[in-house]
Amino acid sequence: MQRVLVTGGAGFIGSNFVHHVLEHTDAVVTVLDKLTYAANREALEMLPEERCTLVVGDIVNEELVDGLVSAHDAVVHFAAESHNDNSLKDPSPFVQTNIVGTFTILEAVRRHGVRLHHVSTDEVYGDLELDDPARFTEATPYAPSSPYSASKAGSDHLVRAWVRSFGVEATLSNCSNNYGPWQHIEKFIPRQITNLVDGVRPKLYGAGLNVRDWIHTEDHSSAVWAILNHGRIGETYLIGADGEKSNLEVVQMILRLMGHPQDDFEHVTDRAGHDLRYAIDSTKLRSELGWQPQYRDFESGLAATIDWYRANEAWWRPKKAAVEAGYAAAGQ
Ligand code: NAD
Ligand code: TDX
Image (tube, rainbow, N blue to C red; front, side):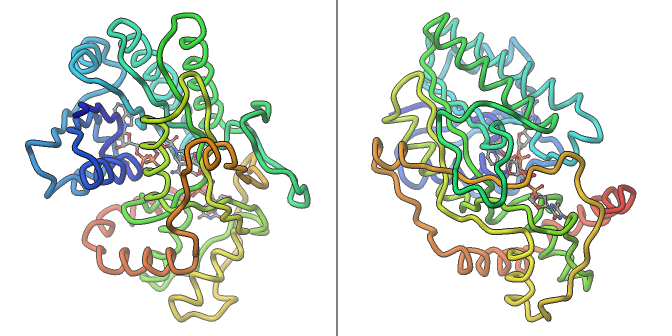
């Protein structure tokens, strides 16, 4: 039996991972989460107390992190500030949590010889041209564009250096855009679904031609578990499910699934430094570890996600007005 410490385990992807581990393995989990605005404590309710404990705290707290790491067999590190638009308004918490926080985790796993899996993003590679047939691979050079992606790139470099210089037993993964239940309504897909529930037109940044490579969060979780258990130490694995779609295509799919005309959206101020296109080649993960995504049909995954937001309005409703006021102030 493994004792796994999951940082950021109350967030969108971290909480899905905790459910995945409890359902598919006999591991016990401790969640370390600061419970920022992005956390979903509710997503951890109903889990068996004897297999899942929540510790509320900050990953930059060296003493707290040290004690927790020493009592576990592995750390899966999801905790981060995760939203690009927020990083453009105030980069400070991104540097603190994503860089200093990862440093704090690394020093603790180094002291105690504990296995680490570091969760990162494809945004560290910058962007691709819309008409470029290339996709990101593990060999693509780092070229982050935003304070968020630069802070994640910094955290990846720290992990690689701690592996090489100190022999820390770590793996890394860089995943594409996730969708599914419990995603904060500041993010693209849940923002548009909840706008339509409110009778507000979806908002596309700029022309809406930017491409994202969508993967269901459940597939991200299964990939992280496979890498934690079977990945080679020091290696990076790209996680993706061949889900490239332009933002315009996604908005039109949401409009169709929710019974609205295809042109019932509006263009708003573009994001500064907006990455054009992300695309993942996940051959290494699939061929080395035999991983496959289960959610291959984006449209049916999106339809289920829409149903989930309709059924869980009580969860997102209290957040909606403040999120939209923030966007309105930025012309978005
Ligand atoms: P999220 O914002 O939904 O959740 C982040 C969680 O981390 C929250 O529960 C928050 O309370 C916690 N947290 C933040 N700062 C903390 C701190 N200082 N100490 C302890 N806990 C803290 O994020 P997410 O979308 O679930 O992303 C999780 C991870 O996956 C991140 O590392 C992100 O970079 C990475 N990732 C996300 C995506 C995506 O599409 N969302 C894609 C690829 C990689
Ligand atoms: O209202 C919107 N309209 C819009 O057109 C919002 C909120 C976004 N967008 C665009 C910007 C992006 O091209 O949609 C796309 C997706 O936006 P986000 O949901 O903010 O995601 P992105 O910036 O691509 O980053 C996400 O994927 C990689 C996660 O937030 C990151 O944590 C992850 O690392």
